[in-house]
Image (tube, rainbow over all chains, first blue to last red; front, side, top):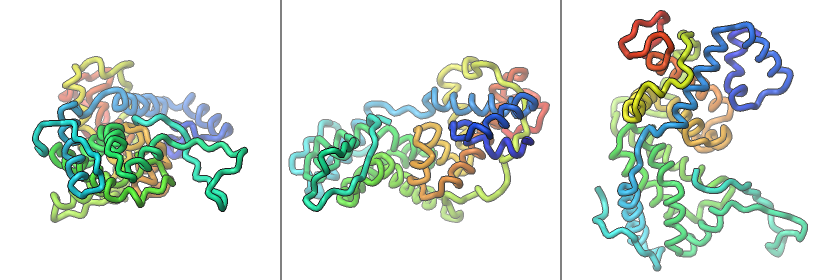
Length: 93
Length: 231
């Protein structure tokens, strides 16, 4: 397995969707290729840092305001007869 | 995702609409909520909104890179979903159905904003750019620890914003929102191999761009690179 072959399997490798024979080849390549080892390590850290940290805030105030606006619109089209919007603030931004 | 995981099994019902006694079907809790919402139960629909509003907002924000657009889109997604509830048959997860609406709305919003350019899931993804690693610097073990929360969030936002929409959408759904590859493909109307290909390139491009902040030897954005990493 060379580096190009390895890269082609990288997504399956991260997702654990690789058959055992191929996995053995991948591991063998990683044991001999420092560049690919770095790529695996840093790509994994890339995924982890995005998963583990909030890129965008979603404050509760915003959630309440948007939810109230949606429920008002749903109520306006008349299919939610028992709708009770739980937010007293004005609808919209 | 907010909903508890359980499998959706769309078993065909018998002629009388009942399942055979020995059949065990796990139904996703959303299915019952959707049925109640269809019947006019506002509380049920509000529960569905609460479960997925964060995911839909973040998805729209990642695609559009505009907070006001993301707010509008989030509201539109739930309102459209409400209007089209009858069309939801439970063949896919309700969340995937919502994400698909959100992606379409977000891309439409991008098209409106960039009137001279076509914006689609295919934009910029046919080039070979970013598919081959060029930066082989090692990173610190916990690279994010050198930045406070606000600095790190800014780095992550700035970095993902530099990806083409088609790439950052796949990365957002698959790696940030934790959709499976199959769910991502379904939400985006792409094949599984197309999702895998775009995901690989999105991950590699983000890796290259983050390396300037996280590498072991050079810690700052102004550091000299020994490799041709493109920030």
